[in-house]
Image (tube, rainbow, N blue to C red; front, side, top):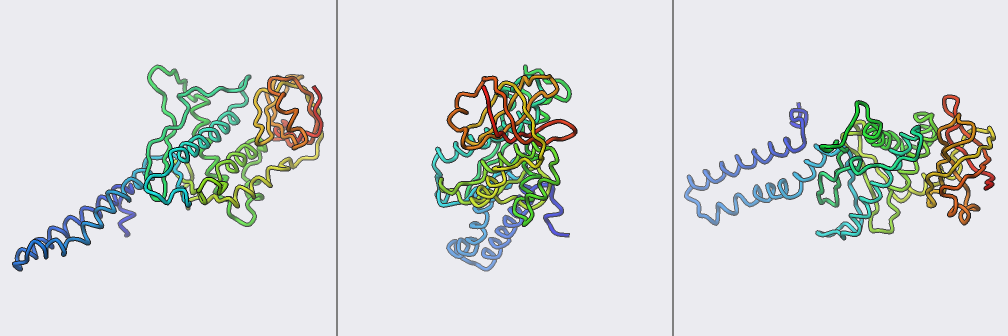
Length: 323
C-alpha cells in the first residue's frame, strides 16, 4: 500500500515525510560524529536534507493545507504569476470574479423565491488559504455567524454548496470532445445549465491578465482530476452560450426585469402575468445592447423560443421586446 493511501490528509503525508527527513539528518549527524568528521563535513552531508525540508515547509505545506481544507480550490498559472509577489490587483480581481459568479449561481438556484435575491454577507465564500506555486486560492463555504438565524434546510446555505457542486460537474466534462452533449445530458434544466456555463465562461482566463490557465477542484466537487480552464475554454463556452435554447416552442410573456447582466446579455423576468411562472431566464441578442441598459425594473413583453423543464418554461431566447 502506498503511503498516500495511509494518510487521510495531504498535510499529514507531508509531515510524515518531514519526520523521515529529520530522522535521516539525525542519523547522518551521528555518523559524522562517530567518524570524527568536522562541522563543515556535517553541514555538507546534511545540506540536501535541509533543502528538502525547506521545500516542504515553505512551498508544499501551504498547498497541502489548501487541498485539505478548501471547498473550492483554484490553481492559477501564467506570466503574471511567475513572481514572488503577484500583483494585489490581479489576486483581488480573481477573487471578485469567484464571488460574482458563485453568487450568480446561488441566486439562480433559489430563484423560486418571490423576488430577486440579495445575498447577505453571511453567504459569501471565505478565503481560507493562499499559497504560491504559481498561485493557489482556497475558498470555504459559508458558515452561519452568531446572530444569523438559519432554519433547517436554509435555501441560501444549501444553494452555496450546490453551486460549487454544479461548477465541478460542468467542468468535469469541459475538455472532452463531446463536452456540450455530456453537459446537456447531465443538466436537463436549461436554466441551471446556462447559469453554470455562464459562470465557467467568466471564470476561465482570458489570457489578458497574465493568467494562462486555471485549475479548479476542492472538497465540494466530485473526486477526480483537476478541471483545467484556459482561454480556449472561455471561447468555446461563449460559443455555446450564443444560442443555448434547444426547444422550438415560441412563447410571449409580460413581466418585470429584476436582474440583468449586460456582459452576458441575460436577464431575469419576474412578476410574470398569469402567475404560473415565478421567473424566467432570458437571453437577448447584441441588437438589443443599447435599449437593454434601460430595462432594469422595467415591465416588458418578450417573445422568443423557449426551452422547458418539468413542464415549465426555464430559458427564453428573445427575438422581440416591447415596453
